[in-house]
Length: 98
Length: 371
Image 1: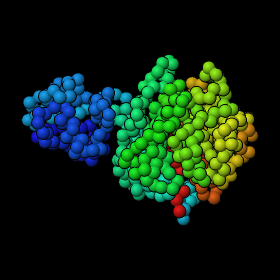
Image 2: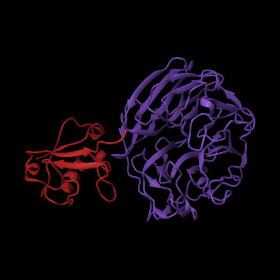
Image 3: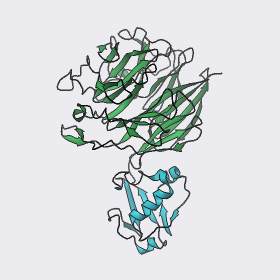
Image 4: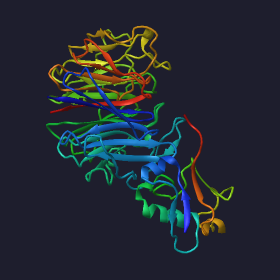
């Protein structure tokens, strides 16, 4: 089970309290986790990655195990600690703006 | 007893202000969608409890929210705005070709007849339609595909389609306005479009009388006289008596002919309202005096309405979608400012009072007159 932490605005939008736990088919990657997340919460489609290109939105970042995974290829395996549910995948809105 | 519901979009959420027909006591609900930019909310004329809201964020993109109970509860609906076909390019600020890219929904215009049909004006300028209550959106690509489309250029606020008017007596006739392309008319429900900018003169473009390229800030019509249009352009207040085929200037004695909103009295088609703003870069009221100007002659002769509005040290702006009228017997006028005030007049503009003073910067105000 993979744990995903969403930023507050997306938790409000999807009406989620706390972390999301996702069962992912096959190897855990950013793509497979986001696919599973959007399948469970369709309202999140387009908010983390673009509808058409599935590219990460510019002010969204993916952190885990004290690393920035944002620039990893979408099919790269996630760290074992994330895949096993020991550590969460953090989806973060950049701290900026007014 | 009749009531009024004001739908207020701000930089940091939406607010719903309600009152009975006296319009002296208001209840404030919100913020809804706190922290998100709410460019516009509007109710369906066919079902006033059906509301649509454009919710957007630089971080998380565009959402469309729908309410079926007058704004008490909301449901996110479709947020995919895909340009039809290969999008192509428009002109960028430096004159180079720039790919069309969806940024946000500026304006939502529900159909007069069907609560499930709603139009969206977006940036980069395009018109979308939903026929299923906002779940899915399809571009009416004949507008962007007009032969002039590749030459359209953004204004300082982006290449935005911000005004959508539907002729209530001929729903297949629509008008839109785009900054900085100009005004356009369709007579076939949005399939094909023609620019309607003859008579406009804009000094900031190479050919001041070009077919397109004018920074139209807002157009307005009275539903009983859909052939008469009023326009607040970047500079100049304009009028057309032939559905936009030609325009003439009616700025008259205004202290500044720059501004953003323009609106028409609910019961007097020749009574119109603007809020003069100083430009080019100041974008605040002349002399620090917040004045609504009213013309009872369809333009040219204007009177300042100041009773209850700040007449010193006022440096707010009033944006293009931030003025609205109700349709009670004594017409109510409302506008919101970038300083977070929403002002109301229940006597057609003769006197004003703030409903709220400290909202986030107001982007839009719509008024619903409820039975």
